[in-house]
Image (cartoon, rainbow over all chains, first blue to last red; front, side, top):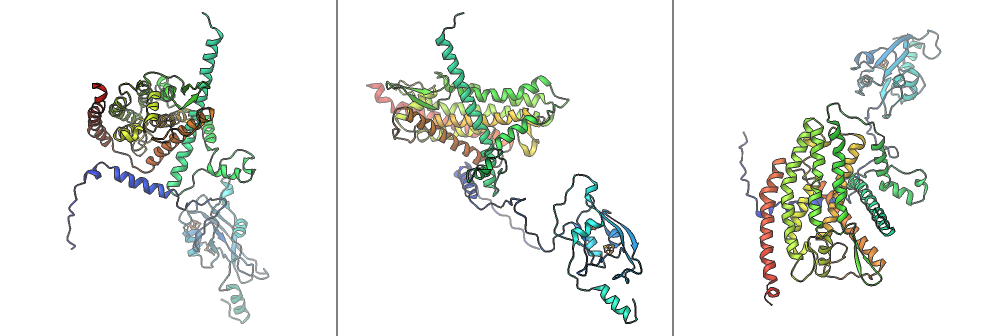
Length: 181
Length: 375
Ligand code: SF4
Ligand code: SF4
């Protein structure tokens, strides 16, 4: 155990007891501060630099082939702590030209931004890497309805992100070779 | 009753001058608020208000954006905001005194300036008059008497609000006022002694006399630094500025005496506080910083005509503004004293110091004036 050292406090000298020299030092500090560079960010004109892992508004993304990635597994809906996500699952028709291997896709996908706490769990849990919290941070609206992002809005906000897997291409290839799933 | 043209003219002129002076002091108070916001921002590494601008002004090249960045139009916006805010009167207040309090706070601040000389007017025939609304023989006594009435506004606000935080603020404020008034008065006595030396023919109780005495020798702050220091500290306490902002004490009394006030009534309190600072700074300038005389020991370098008057007034204003800056500077440097520390400082430190200072100058002045007395 560390030994406790009791520091002897020196009695204040006369000049210290008048406080005046200390006040002068303080005045000097504040005065020099006046000429230092300002840290204020002139917000609407200057935007903050966002770190790469920034968590902005959650959005749905498409892969570079323009295909919907979400398979409406509803894991994000389940994990979302404030229950901001509401998904209506739908199926992809068998004869859909380039998505015949996908069974499901969300019919409707809503994120209520009045509930969302930007925790990023949805992004973390998504098995398809379909939902991302991107850089948009100043989301606002005049009514409550405006604050609920529907599927179209989510895709519009999300855009396309690079993809490492091209899962649907692989599946299609596998099926063509005769071993689906 | 007879009213001849001359009397009417005199009254009219006085009225006009009074309006001008109220306008000047109120403008300065408004811009002190801006200065407070700007200086505090700079000291904290921020830029302060820089958005408000009148329509079209920002299109003037260079000047427009500069004025906007300086926040020159901010006081206008602030004032309008106070005017148009919803007027809320809590149900538990004593209405009459609740409405009276802001006025009682503002009036003394504006009354003290009547006896405040701020320059000199040189007549063609070589005479000079001080620029002052009312040249009272007992100017300083008048100021001491009236300026401490300002505390009634605060006490009244604290009491009529009928709520605990304003009440505490009011109590603290009255206690503080009593403690510092004494030291303030005592710190001025050596000044009277010094100025009214035998044969000088100057009345030390009138501010013009004090300023005139500083033209002949040097600034009183150099002759009597201790008096100046005590007076300055008491002035801080009198104007309720940090480190003595007992009645407000935002950190422990919510808003202090004006917790229950909103909209324009709060605005009046606000303006009163800054008007107090402006007038206080001007008084300190007149008593200790040589008034409108520019340097110690040096005769005014300007000619004795209208130009000289203007430069003198400019000099007085410059000193006052610098002192206002000092008030703001102190506020953003020092933390607030605890209530008991304020009382301790007032009674145990400043009062004895003022007494010792007085005795010292009594001895010094009687020793200095001895040859005059014996011859
Ligand atoms: S976004 Fe991801 S987690 Fe949510 S339903 Fe779609 S695939 Fe599942
Ligand atoms: S970021 Fe969190 S709160 Fe927002 S939708 Fe995703 S899981 Fe829900």
